[in-house]
Image 1 (cartoon, one colour):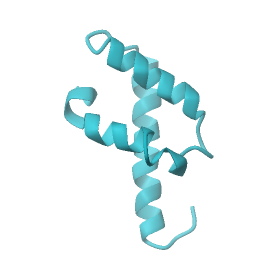
Image 2: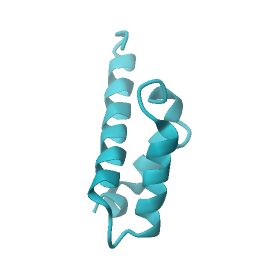
Image 3: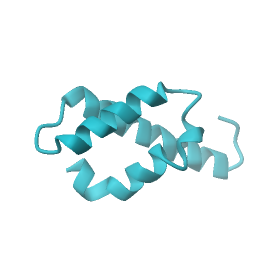
Image 4: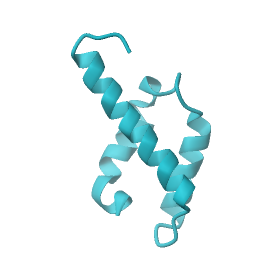
Amino acid sequence: GMLRNHRDLLEQVLGPDAGRIEPYINLPAVKAAYARLLSRPDRPAPLDVQYVWRSASLSLWLRQVQRAGSAA
């Protein structure tokens, strides 16, 4: 699943790189959703998965756009 295959990425985008997405999301809510996923990886709540995955996707997209020199 997402945690098994992408945990390092999730730790990065919700940790040191969280400032990139903070203006666009409710970061405390997403971090809480991620904590719930970590505490119950065998029974993830679908909304928690969506919150975390969408936030990670946004972070990766913003990183790509910012590297290209475009304003996001």
